[in-house]
Length: 184
Image (tube, rainbow, N blue to C red; front, side, top):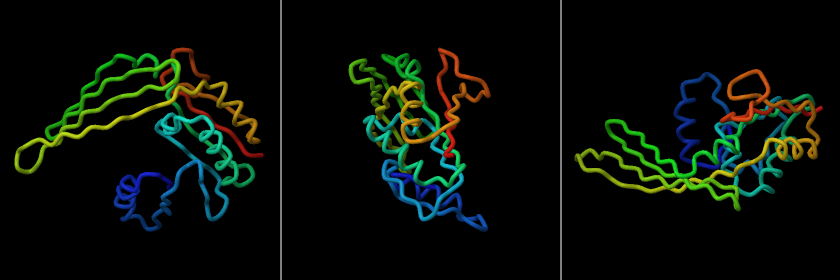
């Protein structure tokens, strides 16, 4: 497992601690992915590529995934579709549990092709008071065709696109698009 967030890796390590053979967890930027030996598959999920807001870094990620794969290896990833990101402009969302409260507002910039969402997080402390935190998240609206072209440029073939958790091509209003590409 590879992640740029040390906190996420710590959570993964805790969850994997009970396994007989826990996976190797590496703290790396996906655009600089370096593995010890070739692997049969590289999987990048939960629209992680959308969070890379510089196209050249996504192209570099594709290059590093290609290098990490053994011949015949499979690269699988998903994105939030540009339509989905654009539709979130002006939306206000709320999520709450007994000990957390989160509200966020989306703003889409057509010029930058970026959805920014500003999150206010409230977490209940043990003493009964609430602690407020803020986060800014940004996601880039990558077009499926440009991603397909970048995959081809690196050398991937057999590039397939799938609709949101469907084994069929994506529809125009799809919220999420899955890709699978093979290293021959």
